[in-house]
Image (tube, rainbow, N blue to C red; front, side, top):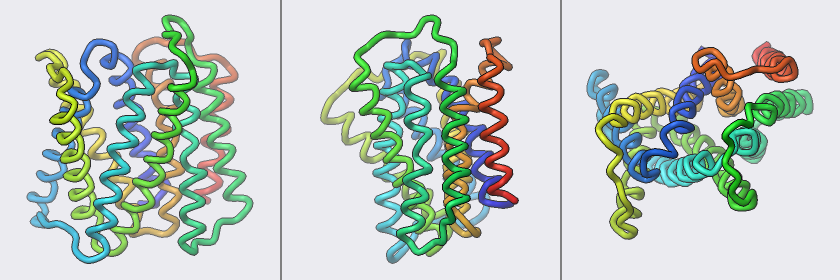
Length: 281
């Protein structure tokens, strides 16, 4: 499978994941929800490694790259959860979804050839996702100050770009499965440290446990898909394609939750998918 195909799998999984965040973030403690998701994701990933007989941690430079990837993933996740808690989606999704620009920059710094046509295609994807998100249903939007929401969204975008850049580099050196395992262990360990220091409320309620576990599995599949692209040509395209999670979130909400989609939003979808098709061509 190509890097773009893996990225689209990740985008679909994170789209479902973020629909759940939108509706759980106002009824369960955020850190408790994230803790459950990270634990479920680690259990899923460990199970995959055991089934394949590859339960081990990376070594050498890949070890340190994976540690950095895990720390960045926690930063990205905290920013994402807190930004979606504040909302609105039309503000949060376009900002977080702009992280492919940073991913292309990291790829260029690493020596990858990035053409102007590829940059234009990535900008078209970001614009398409931005149009879909910015025109999303505004009913019931919270109205907290926009400054902190923008800052959290930017923090999440930087965190995701760093996660994928470091994680794909580690995967290229010592395999995606052990690298992603260490990244997950790192993220979970750091979150446990935050919980021990801050002692926030963690009880999510019995009804939320199953949705949170499913979110953890979706998150596990998505992260593994993007990291796997580190061993393929143009791994940065997986990060680019995965940025369409905001578009998938809204389209899935239209399909399953009957939220309204306008003609300009559908046009944004067409632009984004045409740009993805150009990159894959």
